[in-house]
Amino acid sequence: WFNGELVHVPANYREAMASPQREHWLGAMDTHLDGLEGLGTWLEVVVPEGTRTIPSLYSYDAKTDTTGEITRWKARLVLQGFRQREGVDYNEVFAPTIRSEQVRLMVAMGAK
Image 1: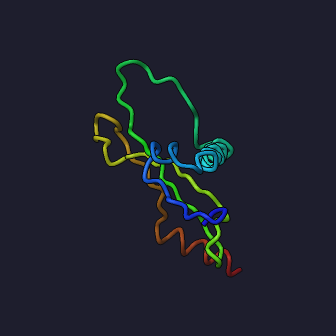
Image 2: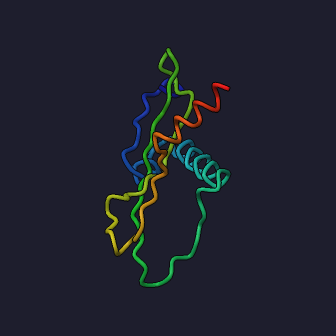
Image 3: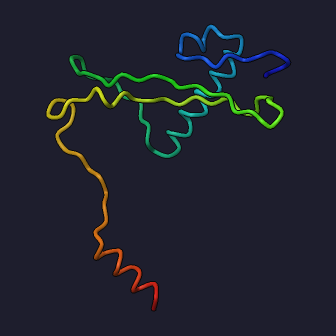
């Protein structure tokens, strides 16, 4: 509920922009992108012609308190990474891992 009215959480950007709460959804999107920029995980660039980009979409949510009143408007930009093709969109995958020997070493050092 917001100002006594039931709020429909949009399923996509078009619904969010047509919503009576449009300004709240825009604010949530700005807040999210500002956070990504602040963390250094987002950089807006010009895509060279002929380059295939990864599609994205926004996911929306309205957080409520115990009485059902909206306390926070949320929007998250989600990339559709499942559409990437190995050898075309990327060549390497990096997944940081730790070996069991390294864990034992850190535990031993912490025990001293």
